Image (cartoon, rainbow, N blue to C red; front, side):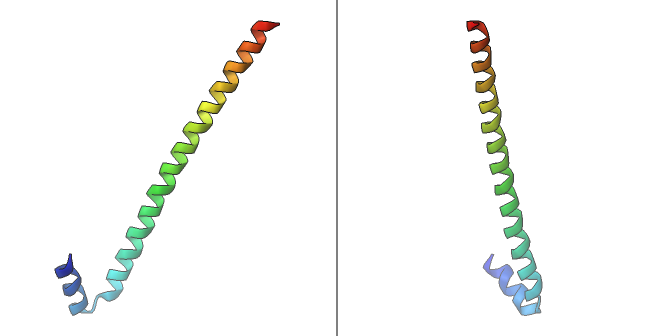
Length: 62
């Protein structure tokens, strides 16, 4: 990676290196946000299943 960075700096493409670093950081944040969204959706689904179980339990008691 060091040799690649030196090559880019030597050719004067520092803007491309900065753009690549920004894109990789943004992509990483997007992947993290999607993982968190999936986890939140799974937790909400578990919550709804538990509420459904409680509703069925209370219906049987009547």
